[in-house]
Each structure stands twice: as C-alpha cells, then as structure tokens.
Length: 164
Image 1: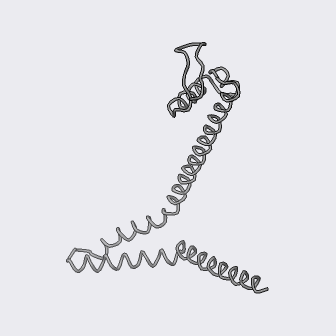
Image 2 (image 1 turned 45 degrees about the vertical axis):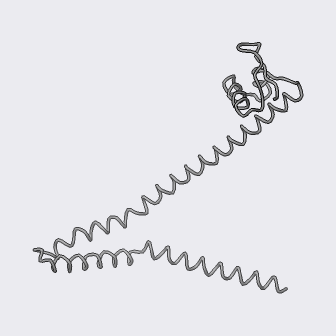
Image 3 (image 1 turned 120 degrees about the vertical axis):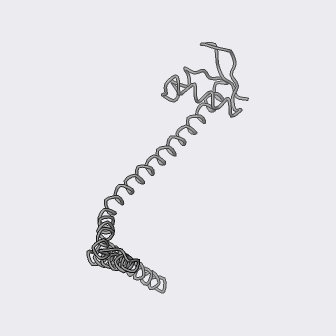
C-alpha cells in the first residue's frame, strides 16, 4: 500500500509540473507579455536616445520597438519550421540506422551462405538477398575490405568468394 501512495504522490508532482509548464507556454505566447516587451523596449530605447541627445528620440524609438514586436510575432512561425526540419533530420537518422542494420544483416547472410556452400558468387548473393548486381558487388567488396572473405578469380562469371 505504501508503494501505491508513493506512486500517487509522483503522479501528482508530474501533474503539477505539467500545469506549470502549460502556464509558462501560455505566458510566452500571450499578448500581455508581448505588449509589455514592446513597451519596455520602447521606453528603454527612448530614454537612451534622449540621453544621447538624438532629436525626436521618442519618435525614433518606435522603429526598434515595432521591429521587436514583429520578431516576437514571427518566432512561432520559425519555430514550426525549425521543428519540422528537426523531425526530417530525425527521420533521416532513423532511416540511416535502419539501412545500416539491414546492411549488417545482409552481410551476415552472405557469410552464412559461404559457410554453407564453401563459396559464393555475385549471382548467388543477388538471389539470396533479392538485391541488385551493384548492391551485391558492394557487399562483397566491403566484406573483402573487412578481411572476412577473399576473391577467387579476376573478372566475370568465374569470380567467387571464400571465407578467410
């Protein structure tokens, strides 16, 4: 029963944290926050321009304040673009990991094929894996560079591969 109470307390803490996070998000996107930021920007720049004796300081302070407002209004748009770009990058990483894993599995199948038949050729690899001639050649070349197999024969249909 003590464990259940501890879990209830943890859930309540998580709910409270989530409520605070949601309030922070609402504040970040609120008109009130943006208006205050624009007002404080306008006042700070106006005071600065007046202090350094710029003519029409308060009128000139409008431009940076409006620019700041525009930048805050457009941030959510750029955030969406940034997030979508990140999602695309994440998807590319997952695809690359999947391809690397698939390549590893296929190369292992080639080695197992050699173990069963004592040797293998490019056509056998194509049939075994259901891949193109180029892909089969690439796998065989990689296995050879890794020092796991050796090529017997120079070119053409007489070439086959054995385990080292």
